[in-house]
Length: 92
Figure (cartoon, rainbow, N blue to C red):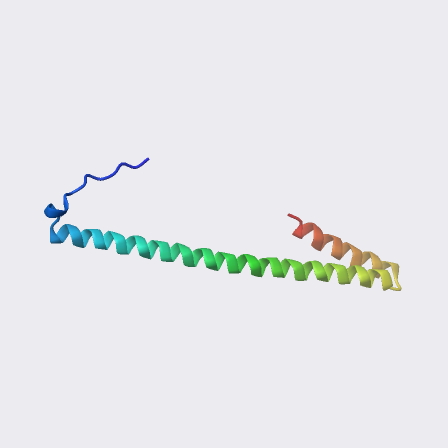
């Protein structure tokens, strides 16, 4: 837990001390803006990654459809194996 700094009565506040307070406030606002921007970027990135994951799972579904319709057993096994591998790698 942080302790409060010693308070200076308003009448005793110097111009330099007031400038320092404004500088501290400006630095805090910049930090808040920075972390807010970082949070928004991470949110966008998470949505992009979720979309890529969903597209890849859709590809796995299509591979399984190909496997069902493949004429050769080797092709069916290959498509099924690839789809299973994709799902395994994307599992949480």
